[in-house]
Length: 366
Length: 71
Image 1 (spheres, rainbow over the protein chains, first blue to last red):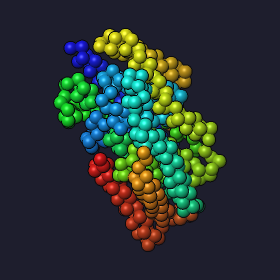
Image 2: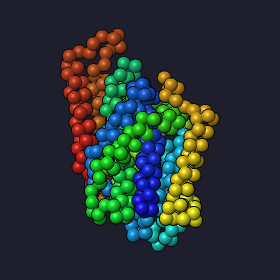
Image 3: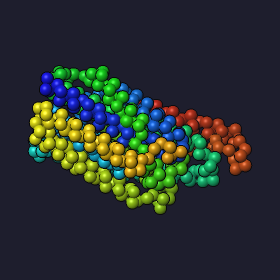
Image 4: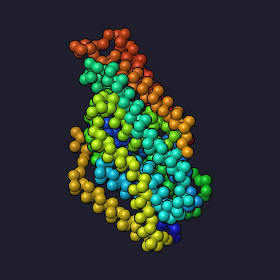
């Protein structure tokens, strides 16, 4: 009975993470479409929400793979997953408060690594996997996307030299196709991480047998959570990518989204894990560099790069604190219940405080 | 530690697809746009533009295929 309550808490916290993942990453696909007015803001996040929902059903091959090459699978317990998810959620909320597009996947991985470190020690963290599958791609993704987008933007602006106004509508239409692909692939990749976490917890609890497929209710609830989060729209982060990194014209919106889509899909094809957030942020910077280097606000870009650097250690530190608190209060049931209530109260406070101290809404982009 | 072969593929495909798709589509948009006085583009130019723009669903379809089939 007690184990089932902890499992239920892990499921709720995993879906909460999925929700924050959705609203934190809405900007990835739709910030440039909103900036170029290819779509009205509400329609853009609505389209992204539908495509994230559909994307969650496209491929179901991921179950229970989150962090499997990064931490020793034998060391993972429901309490570690619980603390890791809370670390990821709070890092997502903090970076949303700051308007910084950081990787939700890295927040989750950082959370799990932090909780594993305090629970099982350094031997349970696989350094090769951490460097090869997380840290190296984190450096490569934005640089690659930036370079591709810069070259594509430079070429496009040479081609349209004296026809800028007359070609804008065509580029907006092309941009929508690319942005839709980015939203769809985001749903496919990110909703499955939540499905994997829930499936893993159910197997650990004995609710599912080893090797079982992901239950339908898990697929539907994860798809719904990420779609609802996306529809809520992380307007603070959308504002950063749409307005604060560089001024985005219709051709740049097209080149940025097309570069993002090609880099993400090329990485999927090669089995090389890249963060959607790092790729799309790099592409937006590249679209600025390709038009005129001085147009990129490097101060904002530097803040984003700093957030990427500290995401794993910060989410890890938060998760370690949540793990130690849960363990101290009683890992069976008292700890998870008390920490869940505390975390929910802290998340609500942060949300309300952020909204009161200068909310950014859909109407601000019209 | 780092899968250099996979990374090489990602770099190659990203540059090839990213630059080719944007250049082709842009050519279609430019050739299909009206001239400086707002007049319609001549028929041969419209035909080439149509061809370039019609190629647009191909990379989208390829992207969907990649999503459906990746590990």
